[in-house]
Image 1 (tube, rainbow, N blue to C red):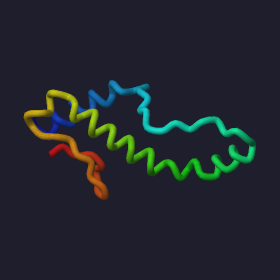
Image 2 (tube, rainbow, N blue to C red):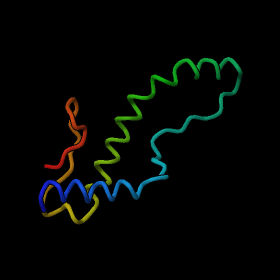
Image 3 (cartoon, rainbow, N blue to C red):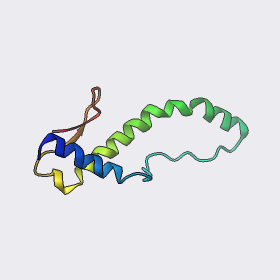
Image 4 (cartoon, one colour):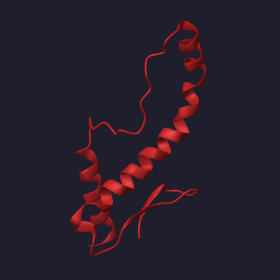
Length: 87
C-alpha cells in the first residue's frame, strides 16, 4: 500500500464518520443567567482542547482499522503539520 492509497482509504473511513458524535465533552445547561454569561465568555477557549481531543480520537479510530496494521500506524504529532501522520 503506497502513501496515496493510505490517504485515500483513511479519507474514506473519515468520510463515513459524517454525523458521528465524539463523546469527548459534555456541557450541561447553565443553572443561572450569570452562569450562562460566564460560559459564553469562556466557550471559545475550549476550541484548542476540543481540536486536540478530536485528533486523538481520529488517530485511535484509524488505528482500529485492520487494513493499516501490516503497513504501519497512525500517530498524532504536536506540534507539527499535519496533525496526524501514518508511520
